[in-house]
Image (cartoon, rainbow, N blue to C red; front, side, top):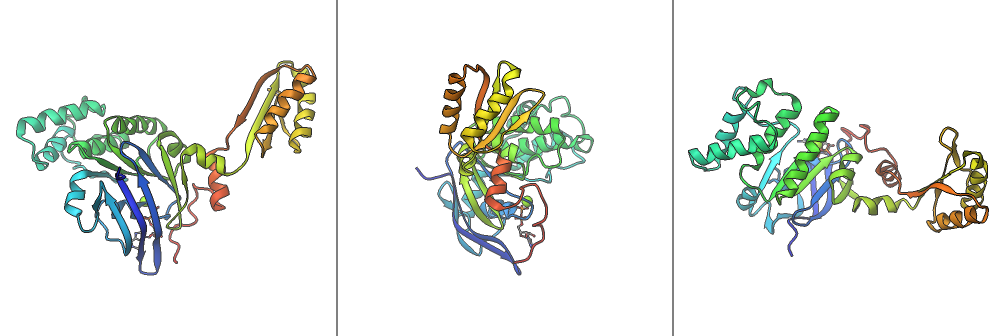
Amino acid sequence: MTPVIETHGLTKAFGGTRALAGVDLQAERGRVLALLGPNGAGKTTIVRVLSTLLRPDGGRASICGYDVVTDAVQVRQLIALTGQYASVDDELTGTENMIMISRLLGFSRSEARARSRRMLERFDLAEAAGRAVKTYSGGMRRRLDLGASLLGNPEVVFLDEPTTGLDPRARLQMWDTVRGVVAAGATVLLTTQYLDEADELADHIAVIDHGEVVASGTPDELKARTGTQTLAVRAVDPGLTPRVSAAVAEIAGVRPDVREDSGLVMATVSDPAMAAAVVRRLDDEGITAAELTLRLPSLDEVFLTLTGHRAEDDTTDGRAA
Ligand SMILES: Nc1ncnc2c1ncn2[C@@H]1O[C@H](COP(=O)(O)OP(=O)(O)O)[C@@H](O)[C@H]1O
Ligand SMILES: [Mg+2]
């Protein structure tokens, strides 16, 4: 089956700045692909190429098999783009914006009305529908923008940093909204600087740094790439914590981190078999574990391992090639 989104060796330079240095991506139908990377990594440039707003210098990109350069007209009929900056009209009400966009998409007056009402309800904006958009909060505006972009039943939805600048509550609401878009059958390409967001929403993550895909895979595959996991053990009897700690130290070959308050003993292990060895040892010593888990590293740790810097820093912004 043809991937819904596909790129091969995409390159783009702005003057002396190399924004894309050969990007390969793929997304299957109905999936969420997250482009995860710091400011200036090239995420928006990729979205602009895929949405036909920007011509690449080299390489190819297609949506549902249509080339974004040579079949741009077809591509535009398949996609919806919502940006970090909402594109709705401030002076109009929510309903007026929706109806105007529906009419531009060619729907009849009554169909435009019906669609607008449904979309405003779906995005939890029914109550605010009669108010001018300039009175909306950032989160409401973002939802209206997304709702408006879905009026044409797009095959692919591009969300460029959909939660940047939103407060935590609006952010969680936006995550729900994105899940709703996927449930409705669309393929989503989402860009984000936030690891938890990619972890939460994406089926597949492409880590972008300096215009290149430096790693890609499912969230769990990426986490497994660092090759380390955290073993956490806690004895039912807190008085046995020192013995648990000694056992873990001997097996893992590192000094464990002991949380005095909870009695949790934690150590980084390179081999998952060490967990089994710890279980056997505790059993031999007659120690009952209340908790014994092997945890994958956080995406934060993964990003640091892969790129040598944290995702959420701005130090690469404005870099020249
Ligand atoms: N229109 C432009 N003119 C000049 N440089 C640009 C332009 N758009 C992007 N860039 C540069 O290209 C690089 C990638 O930018 P961008 O794709 O916006 O990154 P991101 O969206 O990941 O923050 C950055 O170094 C940025 O400064
Ligand atoms: Mg951007």
